[in-house]
Image 1: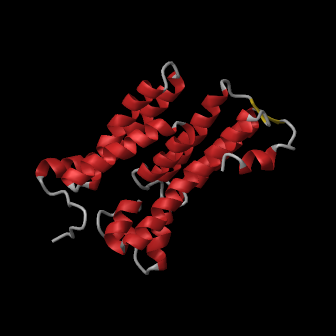
Image 2: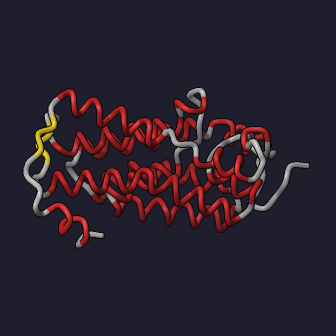
Length: 226
């Protein structure tokens, strides 16, 4: 990917991105993030994903209700809708094919990615309801600061391995995101702010899971509602 995209854009001129274009990119980012792949997967299978399992349209509930195949497909699509737009935008900015009205350029990337995650969590196509943003946040993070993303994946894997709770692993990854960002990207305060925002939003979106964990009613991986 690192070699293909620069080759595709190397003959482009410089495209100015004024305030109006920045606003349009942010709106498009929100709409892209709002594509409800989990809901669509349920529809393909004749199921309203909002009425089964946890009622969430994210990949975790799809895994639980439709199985590994559809859960994996939804996770990849939710990851990709954040990763590829931000990665492409980053390449264009790094190669100076875009001149953004937003300064520094990293802030433009951060705002665009944050809008994708917000679109996923508050989908305009679903009455401004959505998922918890884990897959889309992961795609955004790996496009922009992959070392922190890798740390979050390892944190999730360790906590999930010992607890078998997807939600607990996700919460652990959310907490590790700002900590690992400060460790691996010293002085990059915009990234720090983004990491705190994404981590805090993810924990807040898991508040009902936290309540169930405290009550001992949270389902482990593979468990069905009684």
